[in-house]
Image (tube, rainbow, N blue to C red; front, side, top):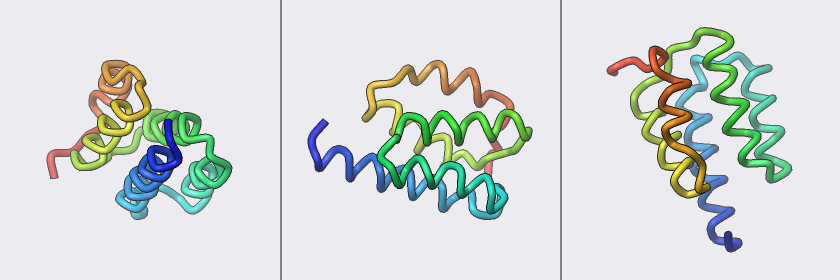
Length: 92
């Protein structure tokens, strides 16, 4: 990935995290933000998804769309995220 790609991924992750401000605790947000801050974007996304699953959180469909976009850009398995997040997405 180019520097532009990394900035694009970071912006997507920050946008995703901002959508979850009311859903995540400060500690959970901080955990994801720490990975973003050091450029560990894959770990940031995995951690975010793991928090949703482990804490049985419901995320908006818009968040799921960003997860899919990140998976595409980062060349990750979109199906894996789809399976992990099944049952954790609200329609609104």
